[in-house]
Amino acid sequence: MNLLEKKRASFIMSKRVTIMIDDDLDKKIRLIQAKKIQDTNKIVSFSEIINETLRKNLKK
Image (cartoon, rainbow, N blue to C red; front, side, top):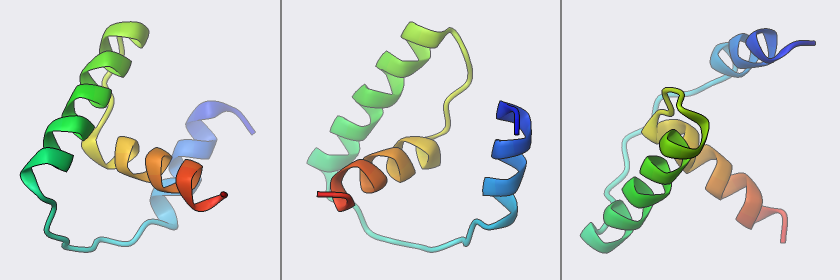
């Protein structure tokens, strides 16, 4: 499965939720997002960063 297929499969299995994020966390997430955009020179959504961060930290 290539990257595009993975993104499509991920999108299909996604669920829209509303959460409240404290300002300090929002700022940190936006900084991570900006760095990833700079490093990859690609569009990176806020949701992608949230999902990556949750996956990484929930594995522990």
